[in-house]
Image 1 (cartoon, one colour):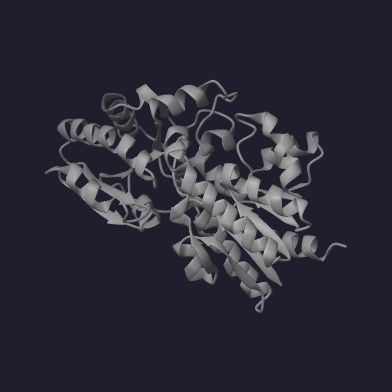
Image 2 (cartoon, rainbow, N blue to C red):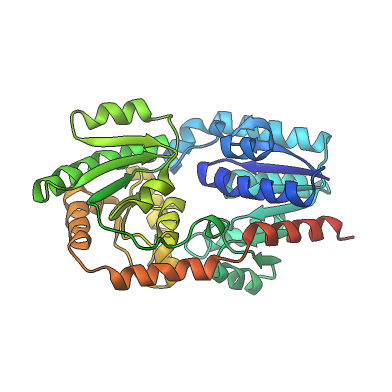
Length: 362
């Protein structure tokens, strides 16, 4: 069996790596290749193109890199039209992957998309292009399937692979650790980190016993982050987010998959989100949901604070963080624990079953 994968960002690399492991266990002789990150490579995917060629955030940021992204997508589609796989699986990154899927589907290649775009939150008219692009959507969240059924698009809820490895921590003892997670992309980190550092200074002034750490998803911005700290007593590490989250009283985290990881571990958090001015002006006009972060959307209410755009400033972040640190968070932790129960469905196994069944369909 020949399986093509395309993951164009850090969160996709993480989820796709779990899928690669499960596919290899179920089909040891299968060939898996494509656009991949380091985690996919380690799991056994043959990397034809590096994920970092595409991994950017925000509309204005994408525009600057658009020519090289379009060239890469053309190379990928040309390769798979000449070397047809049994199935092409786009992992997240809808603006990049759906176009690829559409080209391949029109040429008789079966297509699956893993991780639904947030059409329940914004740009719901994308359903037309989705139906043209992919034969099957594998959804990580139960509320997504309902939307697709309304539009006659085949979709299956497979649960979230992170729920297989992350679960609410037990017997935690407070240690005054506060973790800062400014995101994985350059634009995200450079937008959020200055405000997180301002918040850390204010919080340290209020409680000198607090200990701050920064966990980065990769080392691409490590030098810039280290220089930005500029004498502030903050530890910096790379690739150890889960351990650091589990050992923290509070996490201040960029909205996205990282916030879900914090939620699965049931750790109190403040979620922050900030785009360039142009990107935000466009996105804000297309939103039709009251919850931005995944923990709040999954639970259907504003369980954790969300600080968006101009509200994601050092003073606001500090105020919300200190309120949580000084509160009894028993109820909050119990509510966050529900996320794991809702999403634990042996996602990788269920995804593999769905993929193999689909490939074998006549």
